[in-house]
Structures are given as structure tokens and as C-alpha cells.
Amino acid sequence: MARTGSNIYKRKDGRYEGRILVGKNCRRKPKFIYVYARTLKEVRQKMAAARSAAPAERKTKATVFMRDAAEGWLKEKKEKWKPTTFRMYQIVVRNYIVPLLGDCRTADIDREAMETFAETLDFCSKRKKLSGRYKKYICSLAGQILVYAGSARPPLPEFRADRKTVQPPPEQDLENLKQYLLAHLSEDTCVGILVAMHTGIRIGELCALRWEDFDLDRGCLTVRRNLQRVRRDAPPTGGPKTQVCIQLPKTLSSARVIPLSDGLIDLLRLCRKPAGDYLISGRKSAWAEVRTLQYRFSSILKKCRIPPFRFHMLRHAFASRCVELGCDIKSLSEVLGHSSVQVTMNIYVHSSMRQKKNMMNLVCGQLI
Image (tube, rainbow, N blue to C red):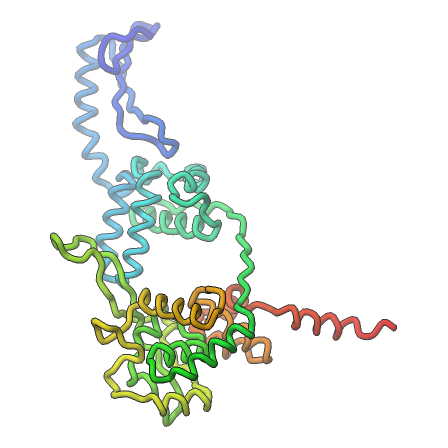
């Protein structure tokens, strides 16, 4: 076709074809609206009418761009979420959903488009490769935004399950750590780490603990809060970009009552402080932040000459030890604050080589 103007072409049948760019499809290719006329003047008039009608078409939720739908979703749901949840969703929207689907109309995102989106997620990642679990999480949020926009939620793509072997620290290292902590009970950080080792509590929950949360007469601990530092949406000029949030626990199951062992109760009686004090205090605030506790924990490992490992591994070690000693999985799941027993088994329970050897001996018995 011969070109006779900006996006206007003369066809072989003598008619004029006008193309109006309306965005890009889910494969990042230009998307056009086409109009036809017998004269050049008439086709220009039709193109002007189509351009003026395009904004009215976008007003309905089902035809909005994914970029606008995502921002509207975040804004409308923000008050219902915890600050950490909102921040996590905001990161996914800005880093993955908007760059890859932002120029697509919500009504055009179908199963094929969602599969293409999943395949290209790694290109938006600063890391080399995203896990299958995280990709599924991103696609699930994209589906929620589509439902909010009035479109049908396409089926989630299938992802290959990532199986990572997480091995808790050796028992001897944990024992050396325990002996160091018992020798330094005057430091509230050591008391807090001992509580984590014997309850499997999360680090954010530990930082938010106050002495009023312990009922030493009944022998239990109530988890009511979670402490995290999150980034501010619009930090003041020259002010901090992040803030500390003391909020509800991670999930409904995370708000729980944990029974304490007799030995831990006796230890806490020796270290008890006023009810309003935090279990672990900071230098500039009444509480210690998560990052502060992580630094202190790393310093203690160095003093004990223990190879470094993450604080969260204490939770893994506690769960695995409970299973090894024959504890009831349902009770363990409730102590850890999980929504189901399956979560406990899949993520936090690790069988040791000794357990596997005992199982083989039990099944096979003596051969000679």
C-alpha cells in the first residue's frame, strides 16, 4: 500500500486505510484501530472521531490499562492491608506487573498473555532467576488486579516446583551457642535468642515482645505483635525513607499462645523486667529492630566461632528437633503459627541422617 499521510495508506482497491495507535498488546507490539474511507479527507475525519472516542472507551473497568488498574487496586485496598503487606504488593506491581503488562488492556489479558508474562518475568528481575514459587505469587497478584478491574481471571501458568534443601545448623554448634547465651543472661539479647531457640518464634515477633506478653504463672507466651521496618510512600524532604511498624502478626494463625518449658520459665523469672519493657531493648529506642538483632546475632556467632547462619534457621532447628523427638505435628504447627500442618511439613521439618538410618534399620533389620 502507498503511504499518503501519517499512518494513512492507500489500498489496492482504491480505499484509504487509517491506523490509530491505542497502545501495545501483551507481547509489547503496537495495537491499532483501523478506519476506512473512499477519500483522504473522509479517512482523516474518521481518524479524528476515533481518537476522541478512545478515552470514553477506557472509562469502563474492563477496558482500562493494567497500569491504571494496578494503581487503583493498590490505592483502594491500602487501608485494609498491613503496611508490610502493602509494601510487598507495591514492589511486585512496580517491578514486574507494570513494566510487562502496564500497556495492556485488562480485557486483552488471557491465558496466553499470562503465560507470556510468566516467561518474561526473569528479564525484569535484578537477580539471575526468580523461583517458581515467587513467579506464581506474582501471577496470582496480577489475577487479583484483573478481577478488581472487572475482567475474568485467566488460569495461572504451571511452574516447576523449586526444592531447596535447607539444613539446620549442626547440633554441636547450637549447643555451643546455648552455653554462651546461658553464660550472658545479663544481656537481654541473649535472653531473647534463648526464647527463639526454645519456641521457634519469628524474628519480627521476637523484637515486638514485651514482658507483659509472658504469663510465667500459667507458663505461656502470647504472640500479639510483629515489628518490621518498611519504606515510606512519600518520605518528607530530608526525612527518613523508612519507618518502624509494630503491627498485627503475619497471619491470623500467627496470633497464638505458646506454652513454655519449665526450664525456660525458671530462666525468665531470673531475668524478669517491668511489664511494659520490651524483651530486647535498643540503644536509641525501647525496642531492638530486626536488623539490629541480626547484627547482634552475627556478632555472637563470631564470638562462639560458629560458622554464620541466618537467625531464621533457629526456627528450622526448633521444628526439626521437635519432630525428631516424636512431637505431635498438629501441636507443632500451632506453636509455629502455621495455617496448616502441610506448611510445617514442607518448609520447616528436616529429617536428619540419623533419623533416616534408624528408619532403614527398622525396616531392613539384621541381614547376617
